[in-house]
Image (tube, rainbow, N blue to C red; front, side):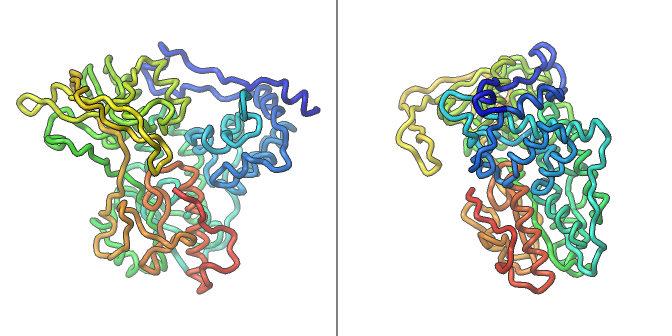
Length: 472
């Protein structure tokens, strides 16, 4: 097929549940491609000599290669091409912000065109493998005499375990929650990331020298030094960023009806039924805020809207998620921020807000919101859910002195991810701050290679496959 013919193929749009079908349940909203649709979409790829999509992928997946295999209907080979670089394509294909990463760098998306649907093609391969009951495991090396403890079972920790186990280094993962998967399990609703998909890929890790112990909190049930004393030769810290960042408003912590975003999602995803009331105000513009609002709808809140202090163009959330949010009837109050909590007898009654306007760009590159004096207004609300970012919770540190950044993340060697404690490495959100699953996966690969070098007494900077130049 010539390039001109490929350019004539329109991007293939997946089938989605209607709004009426989806807002009463947690079924996955977007259906995967059929074989014919996937092959047709794969034929849109121009197989660029200098593929921007690969550079845009934090894991550096060989995207043109797996697409070429897919369009030749070599589905299993295409899946394993992805697995050469990615430990969890099932997750990344569904929750990565593709428009900001691989698809954002696709030459077909420049100007008025539409990028190749890389995420949907990756998802098709995963779903095909699971649907056809293909083996997702790979042969592992015989275990040696070194062993590693991993704190946290999110994408960074799981990737470290996967990489090390395949190199003959047994790993034990300690997860404080009752379920494994970290934020993937407790921070993302099932309508975006079905639990059977997480389990299919994560279960493959457990067959290769990886032990997962849930309900064990390092820093409380046992210390990092205890792990060292038990014979673990190195530790990886992948605790994520699970502590909600506060708004800093008076009475925020003691007013009934104020619940922070990641806390709400964690409790819901672990099986609680939480009624936020009919009128719910969510603060924030990222995926956590979007997930909170859409989850509240599904639990019966009928008047849900989001406060965001910038404009839609600056929202860090995936645009596909914003689109679904608005389809489902959630309103977004742009250029507004909360300034005061109103309550009676300790119970929330309303949120006082102020209008903003955009000034010059700040350090993030987005235009800085500036207060419009005298523009205050009050919104009646039964619940206020701040979802403005997360911090690292440092329970696991107890008994160890770590060097931290000004943001409270672990201050690691920027290339090897070794912490200030020689035998402890860290990666993912507890180093980057809240970021994408793909970046956590990449840092897991870097940390695994560093740990292997450390265990074998090799220089951490010499003869490396992976180093960590990723910026947050």
